[in-house]
Image (cartoon, rainbow, N blue to C red; front, side, top):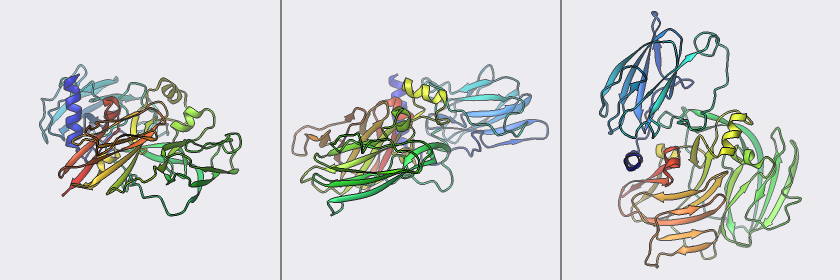
Length: 437
């Protein structure tokens, strides 16, 4: 286990952005010859095999062109078949799988790598299934509980951009009026993976609200969706009967509250089944600044959440929600996005990281590799200040909690950040800060 954790941290520190195999429909870049031979390029990187699934019609002669894209050595072994040698960075090997008539698996045999997620599946297409053979469209299935989840080493779609994590300061006004429209939308939640989400304002998480103690927030909720929705602001203190009621499609309501206490607060849909509404993307953050909050050089907001893939309301997806076995973890709604497009800073700057744990079924242990937090503010109270002699390594938050930490990066370099529950870090809850001189 220690070896696996060291390997995972090495991958995160290496931070190999970009790259990945070209893919179409999850089947990988391949060519099929007239003789019934299919050749598929397979890449080994980020403790993943990409593509994670190769689908071929029964009777196809399959050839894999395997290449290692990172510094660590990897190989690939076919179940009851051949294997490559251990490959260094940039090295490749050709695997003659043979004629495929049944499903098979393949994996990296280096100690701990298969357990960390380096496996793939060779699947035989049923007669009439999508792809070769019938042309009939079929719904992509989500990974089952315990599967490797989305391929985090794959490419994002052309034109994709990460969600801006920079947090602007609170505006000068003391009344903040915002209209939030519930929107059902397909969102790329992992490289090449689009998921139908229920959202506030077309994003998951929804727009961030910010103000000061004593400010009034007036939110107009408009239901543009196909089912009933509501909204619950943890930052407010008022009877929930009217402002948090469920409204049907085409209806609207006004939710008005005064922020009486500082903190990093969660808001979310409160309509039953609440588990599904939050897991489908209906959550966001409200930042209420503590009085006399010092200015810093940069502020970032990271909302931690679980990702569940598959048809909205599907039995398998809901079962995974209830079992608390997500397909991936994310900061600001997209698994691994800040490994591809890191946050930025300069050496010597003071950076404040606000963090909110949206769940719906888990918290976060926020950690930045290579620095120490000298300020910790958790659930409305300072736990540590710069003048104190101690330091902190993690901001630990339970589900629905929030706070911030501050650090000064000592020198230029790439500083990974993770949820230090390594199961979550491996499953997408990681990124990096690029620090320049």
